[in-house]
Image 1 (spheres, rainbow, N blue to C red):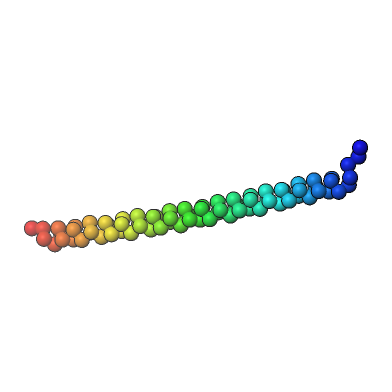
Image 2 (cartoon, rainbow, N blue to C red; image 1 turned 90 degrees about the horizontal axis):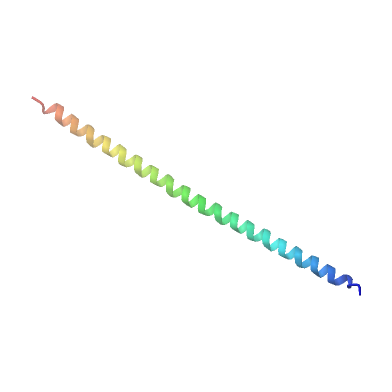
Length: 74
C-alpha cells in the first residue's frame, strides 16, 4: 500500500527541524567556546601584565640597593 504524500513531507520536515536544531546547537557550542577562549585569553594577558609589573618593581629595588651600596662604599 503506498504511503500518503503528507507522510513523506512530515518526515522531511522533521528532518529539516532536527538539522536546524543541530545547526543551532553547533552555533551555540561555537559561541560558548569563543567566549571561553576569550575569557582565558583575557586572564592570561592580565597575568602577563602582573608578571611584568613584578619584574620591573624588582629591577628597581635591585637598582636602589646598588645605588645605596655604591654611594656608601668606602
